[in-house]
Image (cartoon, rainbow, N blue to C red):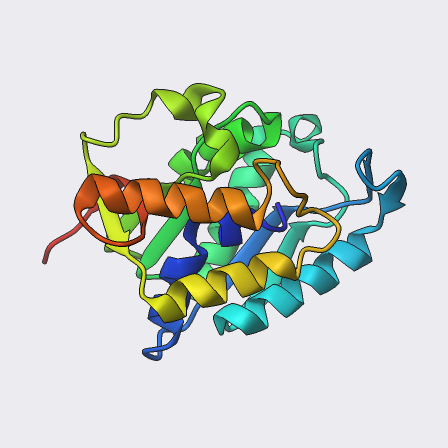
Amino acid sequence: HADDMELGCGGYMHRHATVGAQTLNLIVALGDVYFEHLGRLVTSGERFAEAAEAAQRLRVGSVEVMFADKDGKLDTLPMGDIVQALDRHIAEFEPTEILIPLPSSHQDHTILYQACLAATRPSAKRPVQLIAAYEYPATSWGPGGESDAGKGGMYVGLSEGDISAKTDALRCYRSQMRDGHCFSVEAALALAKIRGIECGLPRAELFHVMRRLVP
């Protein structure tokens, strides 16, 4: 979804983009959504505009959408269709690293996680050096909360520039960020501080390594 990448791995994306890495934010499910905290419908176009603005803050090269009308509705698609769409994007972009969201209480996250397992199956034709799952504030409720940070956890330290770009990107999501909520700049900073304490750094993002190739 729009804003999940920024919450979970925005600092990591910025860190790599600033040294010249080619980066892509693939929004799998977008769509019109009624937000109770706003009391109105937020359109797919408005949400994409926020994502594009956030990408500029992180220096992410491009933003693409797989399914423009399936936010909260990935369960209405055959799993094979989702996997095939992911296959096409992976074949076209040829990534060396793939970051996916951990499953959570949101059904789209659980479905996408399962689809990514299929789409990132080992392949000699397109070896990917790192496949890792990122967390975000809402991961703690649901199957993603069962992941043990001490087992396969990869901590990535965030510089002041990284954390500043991450928070600037999140503020672009004016329709979704809200004070005192897990979807907030405050929550993202708190989580980064906790992960930093766990690994001895000022701030960090945590990734669960699924596969890592060392040639």
